[in-house]
Image (tube, rainbow, N blue to C red; front, top):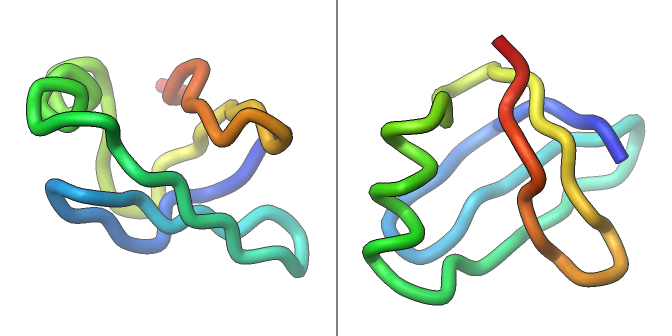
Length: 60
């Protein structure tokens, strides 16, 4: 699925996809920093796996 980042912190990210608000928990602080370094930011587009609650990539 594709959505937009609405909010995030070191433990989770909130994504708005259509009318759904999806919360994905980070498995570790290292995962959080990995995504910060690889494009995570407010109002950024994100591709994610809804069923497995995993981030695939952030759109540039």
